[in-house]
Amino acid sequence: GLLGVEQTGPIMSMMPIFLVGIVFGLAMDYQVFLVSRMREAYVHGERAGEAIVSGFRHSSRVVVAAALIMMAVFSGFITAGESMVKTIGFGLAIAVLFDALVVRMAFVPAVLALLGDRAWWLPSRLSRLLPHVDIEGEALGGRAAAPTAEAEEADRAPVPV
Image 1: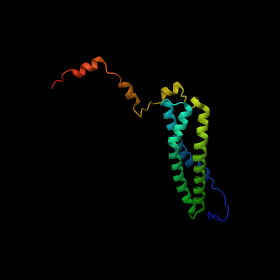
Image 2: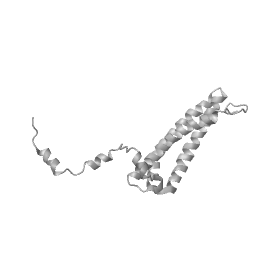
Image 3: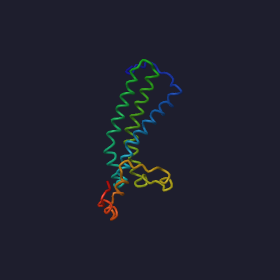
Image 4: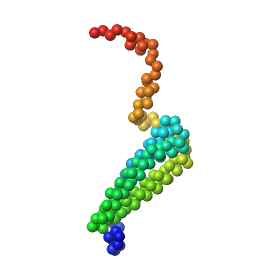
């Protein structure tokens, strides 16, 4: 009565496929928000446990905010007149709640903590195949080492006009 559903009915055959597709896409977004910050902390020298804690501390608010927004949007579908739209809205809201708060906020950090350094291990063969994306410019820091004597001489040389 509260949701405006007076009688039960069958679940459409496409409903589970639809729900899994939408929730999988949202789950990957939440996973990227959460784990990329943890990986960044680990790469910058923090131990595995510390990286999980600091990454979780910095990115958990983003995941919770995104989940609450999506739950609010999907809960709005429950007020619709058609029962199919109500079912989709209710299913998506509950799925986002479970995925973001239980799976991403509890299971993923727990599994990463149990794995320790092995969670961040990348086989060398795969590492060679993947592109090296240097967003923060760390490679530039290595190149800006002490200038050589030749470079200093070139800087002092007069420039022809």
